[in-house]
Amino acid sequence: MSNFEPKTERPRWKFVAFVFVYMIAIKLLPYVMSRFTEMSIEEAFASYPWGFSPIFALALFGGAIYRSKMVAVWAPLAAMLLGDLGIWAITGVFSYAFYSTQVLVYLSFALCAVIGFSLRSKRTIGKTVGAGFAGCLVFFIITNFGAWIGFTTYPKTLSGLIECYIAGLPFFRNHLIATAIFGGILFSPACLYQVSSAKAEPELLPATSV
Image (cartoon, rainbow, N blue to C red; front, side, top):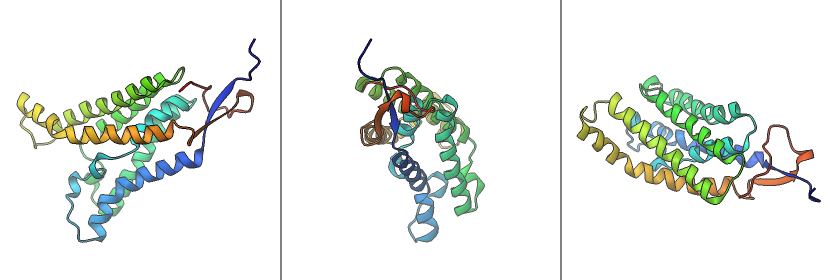
């Protein structure tokens, strides 16, 4: 028997909540700027500025840390929904917030949380980096395919599909950078600390190694 009391990781919830609020605020930023300034922004296609968002890291973090898998999947989707409702309120245009392929975006983020489940039992730097890359890749593949299918921007041919994926590469790169930065923060001691398992809150997972 070990003489050491088992440990459990506990998030600093105020810090996590701040990242969630930041995620929603940065999602709304292009629409706020377009509405209340003279800056010209193509609202119908505006997204996170340069695709730089903590959503992938938050989804992986929830999948890895929250005991409830249901909460892990639905928490980032709820934040996304709040942001989309905000877009609708700011612009007054339903299709800006809820366009024809939006369900694929939500599905992609849900899958990011599911990928985070692989970090529940044992977490290493290599596994965390791999999960972050996999989450961004899943989003890139699904959403660009949806853009090719759902919009008239690209011809419905193999060359059109390839062109769509090539056009999405800068956003994929920025998703990776954002996930590396925010994931590094969320999975660091700045956001996680350890307590004895006897004192741990029931919704959290047992300790994992980083």
